Image (cartoon, rainbow, N blue to C red; front, side, top):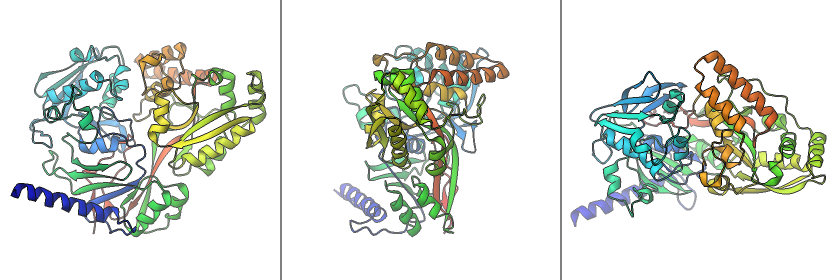
Length: 538
């Protein structure tokens, strides 16, 4: 009875602390405590806490609740750092990666972390065909071969054999992000139902070894991470990391001005600009490798016609959108490969050309245009960009109805290939290799509906080019760096002529507004920002 009473008191105390931070129904808020960091942003895209099933937006949470074998440096994402693995080697034939794990690491449950946990976690992604499986499939891993290819020769060694020739650096980069974390298999086994390997339970719970553990998640409301006092790197200074759902930019601005939140993550350009002279905050922008794009589904016969896709390319006001709507969000970029990557080229001379677009549509059999739908997230800057594109599309005769929604309504429809037009953010680039962008936006190894290669935007949009597939594979395997660079340049010139389903219009810039008393926070361009070193000076 006494034990139960203590649990109730503890739960009530946690609920009270959360209510103070998240506000009362009347809208009043308490200033954030010195041992907690509070982040305000839109949580519309947050759908699961399962590392293997996440769609990408949840990666920051995963990176704080779980540990990866290796990590990348937030200051230079091409630099790979140790994680659970203290060292690693690549075999001379570039086909086997071997990781030596740290001894003595424990999960938050107290269970020891072994190579078997890592292997079980990685195999699970493919064996359950979770969302993150697509990345592994792109290397040739399958549910059938993963048991032979990913193994634990001993309790502190993980061995990954690559099923097909590739650049092993790509696999190393992939192991620093996404669902490639160590999950506490013994804890998950206690919550398994009907052989689901904990899928239902992990959707709303954590089983990691990271600096923080999941305390509470209320979708589109709050998410609370609690400090792991026994963390193997040392306990974080912050007792809690609290995410508050503040989808409106103005609400975030008011909250950070009042001190109700410490970090504002999804503010619009107007509100960010209004804070540039505020001495209590700092504005930090990070150029990402991802791109904003206009995508068209080639499952739709209209957009399967190259002339229609070329018309779309000519109905975007690239300069107007980037100069007016994208400050703090993106910088003009019209090619698939991110700026400054190997083989990147200057932008082509694409511009708004309504007469040319009308001519192309007429040639394609649409002299009077057509009606379609344009899916877009409700987060900034998407609504304003969608309105701008709706206007220029209309000039060419395309009547696009804007369908605004959350991540599942927008990207979920894209993953199911049930969309017409979409303004999205993605296209690879979380790692600095040019293949990352090309694999995401253009490469499509299997265009069948049954393949469900949903991590490839090319597959989602039903774009399939055997010629470009081959060119991308050839460039990936080229060991001479100068030749490889030339091959990537050639691919981008081919893209100009082929007109794929996705047209980038801006390279992402992620801008955060941070309270000046927050120290040690560094946004990671790979979306794996960690709070283990964050402190406050008060």
